[in-house]
Image (cartoon, rainbow, N blue to C red; front, side, top):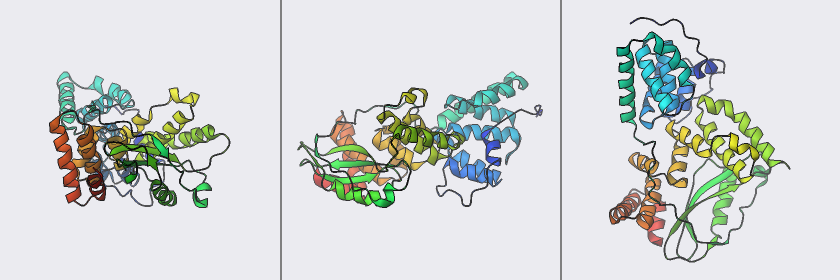
Amino acid sequence: MIRLPRLIIISAMSLLFSLSAPAALAQQTEDFTVGLDLLALERFEDAHTVFQQLMPLGSSDAAYMIGLMLIEERGVEYNPVASLGYLFAARAWGNEQAQEIIEQIEPHLSAAEKAEANQLLLELNRSVQVSFQAEDLNLDMPPPEAINRPTPRMTSEVALSGNHGWLEVIIGINPEGRVVAMQPLNAADRNFLREAGRAFQRWRYTESENVSITTVSINYTQMSSDAEADVLSAYNDALNQANAGVTEQQVYLGGLTEALVRYESEQIDALPEAFYWYERAARNGNIQAQRLLALRYVHPAWAEYLITQGDIDVMAWHGMRLLMHAESAEQRERGRELLENAAEAGSSIAEELIESY
């Protein structure tokens, strides 16, 4: 294979080598951040394995990184044709940086080699397990009207933390208007989460015919007099790592974006939507982002993916939504089966929802 002239590449990989190596690897094996940690430790073959594991999720960051590794000979053999195929996938899946590298590779390849790269793109697209085109099953129904929702008590540890934090939680409301099931959807402060659980026991909604499911977001840190400026500062601090692919920071930016929407910030029009950051983190293997999309954004494809991965609580919530709101009898029956299977597998959430149904 003819070797291309040296490319002028300023990549996320180059950025990583300017950072200090992590003290410990991230815990989730199939998470893009793990691959970044491995790159920083110069464990290139292991990093390549992690990025390959993310291809069925349609990770544009992983496709981009594999494309760079193939052209820079980092843990894999030099292969500009395969590199181009992965960069084509990265571009198709939303990575804006890929185009610059594509333009450097394409002029040096023959028509046959470009066709081979396009064939690899088709194969990568066929391997994606979670469609980019979300099917809307109309499962997100408005909850009953809230009668009493006391705010969880703010502990001194949380109040003095100085960070912008929030709790995302999905709750099940029985026909009498009581919260009978709840599950946090983000890594909220443990002390506040405990207080929130106590508060939810006192929440009351109007009575309804059956179980309702909704999500709630509660801020729990005290900000300065200019909360919008604080959030924008936190956003800018996290942006570089999020763009490099650190999934925790991508999820964080999603939450900060939603905070800016609540503050009616004039800056919001110039920023990506929260969904963009959650979707990017989810396709990078972040389970928290996947659950947010499945349960808060009511994204059926992510719910079905998590169910195939054995997430019995997502099985319970999604099953109840299908049972309550799906248009077809077939889908409602599947919802019943999912709910019952989740209960049999040990989901206390499923048991609570079934008891209230």
